[in-house]
Length: 455
Ligand SMILES: *Cc1c(COP(=O)(O)O)cnc(C)c1O
Image (cartoon, rainbow, N blue to C red; front, side):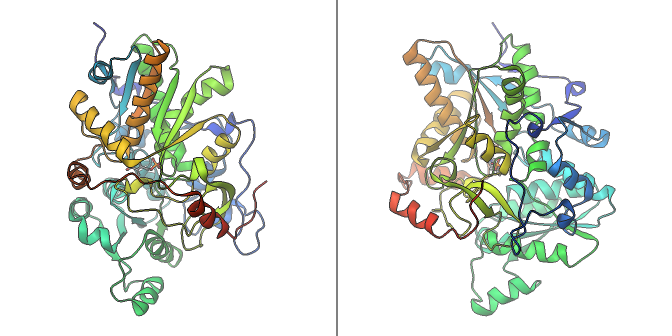
């Protein structure tokens, strides 16, 4: 019998990250200065990011070498295993062969340390002393706290007040790794003080937390700001996932899969799995589909518009070309907090526009049904975000059965759900409801967008 778990040696951790920009038929449009609306050069970003990351952000080199120190630290959790989902195949009675890459074995429990460690490394190399960031539910904050501690960097995390109060365990993980976690809005920044003056009991928002973290980095030589998704260099660092997956499929005796699937928030875990497969498609003409799975309550890829928009909700960042619902769009409070982002990274947006990748939107009830089926057939309890990928894999396996075809399906199980059991509790209590936006709600969100047309 073929093995359930397909593993690699530490020596098989990729030596390079793969940059999809080198193979794209159409390049991404340049970022714009929000004031002048002229294209900005790389140096506009230098108050916030170290030079090496800015270089990666605009690079068109196909393969970028992973520093030896980063590869060495990757061995803490990499290579991650790939599993043949025999239990799920049996439960679905499908002729499809389903594989999943499991990123939940990292110390923070998701794929995010793949970029956090790289970002901390380049900041430390440049002599930066402190990194600031924002976090909502805490996945990114905990990945960055872990990474900063490896390099002796101070880490200041602005955590949305309501999550800070309601989700103490992610905060305590960050504290355990030595990070300072500040409920946002805070008295520490002008942005925070301004909000608190208007509303001392403000629950905070990701947009406010970004403003605070950026203000701290912009105002201090020794401090930089880091982001956990969306940007090109973040997507680049995640491509270790797909490169390992390619090697593991080959080890399992498979050719290229028919379809690769991943959940989609800003694009990093989707890019991480899919981009190395797209290299085979774009450079070698391989026929495979890559599907991004987004929530029906935040459907920027399937129902948004391709426009220039801000990366944050306040409107401080450069304007980036992306599929978006508008930076002021506030999605419903679904449990997959990591997927509640208004826009999408520029690389994935351009690939979607060129019909090289696909997207589907899923109702959260369907995702939890799939997640519970997965936990009961495979054992691992997925993060609510990861359930979106599981649900599309289930749909594809059912379609393979209907077609009577032994298709090969690969998906990214990007994190475990051990800190998200309250979401499962709500699901079991029947408190989750089907929710999709009406066309009127979508139209209203899009009508509010006042940023420039793209292309
Ligand atoms: C952050 C996060 C996401 C969404 O972000 P992407 O950049 O789209 O990957 C999805 N799943 C998990 C487990 C996360 O932590």
